[in-house]
Image 1 (tube, rainbow, N blue to C red):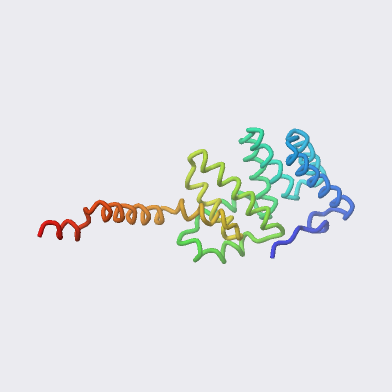
Image 2: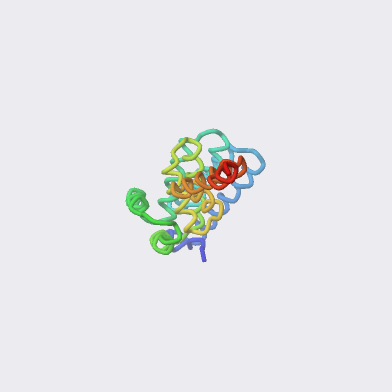
Length: 196
């Protein structure tokens, strides 16, 4: 089960960590009310007090997407992932890129590598980043992000990863072509039956 990091995990006093969580929550409330600039300021303030807590990065990234600051959102998502996963993002990328085989076959391995103090933040950040990458036409990078998020329990990401899997795409294309041929009566059996 995912858990929120403790103040000790982040090297903070309980009082300072409570202040960071309050600022993060205030930022969410402001974003929900549509005051996006003030929300970004709250998230930035929370990050200033504790750079290792991934939630404000995630929330600021989502808010920046709403203000069309996509490149800044991607930077925040990279940082959220780095903070949530607890390892250098280049190392994490190498681990992801070295993975082959179906997602379910590697889920336990990936989960054991990535599950840390905040897998929910990691899952959310990977899903957001995957969505941005998909919109930018970076399907392979998006698929990798969705697969990581899926191993952390994100159902939306699991569906997106499946859609982007090249083998699943090929299979879906073949099945669609066969069904279309069957409907049009051009399948091998239908064509032979009509010829007799």
